[in-house]
Image (tube, rainbow, N blue to C red; front, side, top):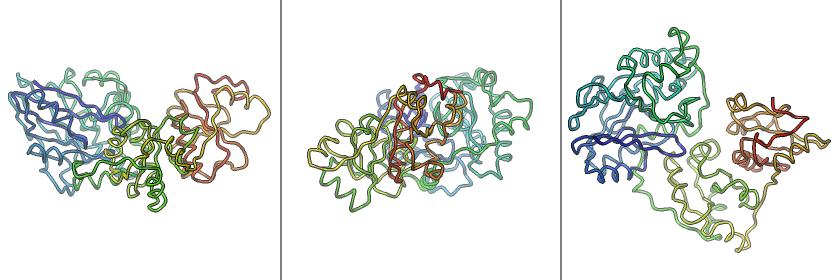
Length: 454
């Protein structure tokens, strides 16, 4: 038997390659599909079928590219939606490969047409269930994509899917979800690499309920909706263009880089660490550390505008992959040689002030004016503690809350480490704020007496 769980950094996305007797199936492939081809060939398998659990909102799927490269049969969920490719999955439909088979279950809730796939083993007993975004380790799928007026209806459907369709498979059945900890498709996925139905019954906080009404009360909530989700929904119905159709973004000279930036109003994304960005960066740049690209680019950069990259090292392969996975296809190039070449060409750069945690604590305990902006998420504040007198505005909500920030006193921007704070500072600087100070470090170093952690 072939089994590979393939994790996509940044998206906290899981896809699966499973097979037997030389025939393989891929479930929920990411857009860059070479890893499935490589692993299948190395194991001596041919990919015969591609299955999707639901219409995805947070990344572009690679189903069409896999079909193009392998000739595999392609099936999608959410049959009521206007898909431009593949075949619709039917309830109870089976897919046999070697001595194994997968059976489709209609498990609505996260989306109306969500499907789960039950893997039956050699003894024809259920071994695993691929739940997509219906059930995760420690959480369940968000139910807010149809809007606030549909929350109770979708939460009710999710309850039926989990308690009446997935649970009866047996406590020993392994759950294989489409996302791990850090995904935007649920609010609190646990950092458990593997889980089972029995483990989730025992440990999943969302499942510790006496009835459907209590479950609905727990999960029927509106979560943040990233602006790029809408574009993902549209492209995943039409079928994302294969990456093989795109030219490799090129290294640009400082002159070429500056020309594209000015003439085409390109967005400059600087993926270096926060200290490097603080010291010097191209004016107007957006600071997003490379491992955070998939989490935050969609909040601050429109999908229909060209992108330029400033990175560390040579060809930014991983950064480009991250952006392609969420639909940022118009990457015009990257600054060849990095920021040092920019300076050697006599180009103007900018900087952002930084302070250490202990310096901010001294400022607070003294008599200087200050305004503390905490850009952590609400659940982080609740779990780690809040800073007394700090204003908490989550990083993604800054553009809508600029009026809450002063322009007549220094702003000290705080998060867990300083990385997201630098993103916030770059956003605010581009909005006209001047006296910005990024606090390096985090709560571990906090020692203020006048402004304690509550």
